[in-house]
Length: 160
Image (cartoon, rainbow, N blue to C red; front, side, top):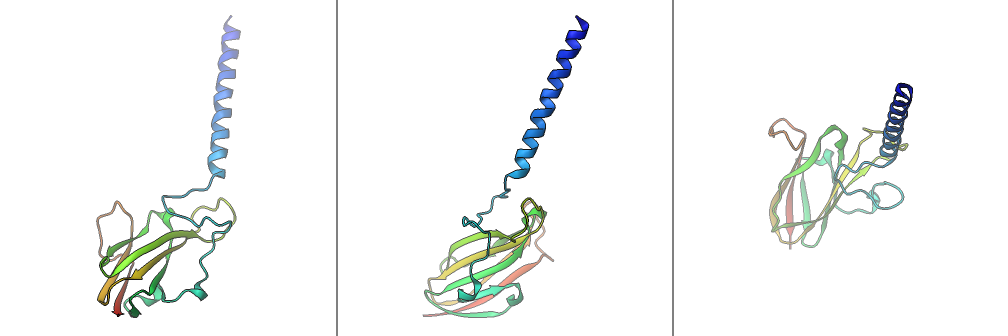
């Protein structure tokens, strides 16, 4: 009787281990989204930046962009949300700029490579003439500190 009980316990433990291993394998093979919109095409490639007008990157921070009402402003900022950091818009005049889209696009890498990073892409449409500024910081959402963080700022001069 004792042998049968021990055998049943051993079978039960092996069954639990097998279920745990299969669950682990399944979760490793599924893509992780981290709450960002990603490209729905078959490749996680950047939009064709050669075709984008008014494209600004981190190298353009602090500059002045001259646009016209109805133009599209494109921002492409390097990002790696696996570190906990993400871009957060901290200053945006919604009467002058309308956010028309954003998505995180991971670099094309071998499957299941954690930590490879990518780009955060933002698109805005200018809807009113005037001068304004857009400011974005790269921070962890749970941290309150906003000084000494990587940031992107762009002064906008929007003509009619």
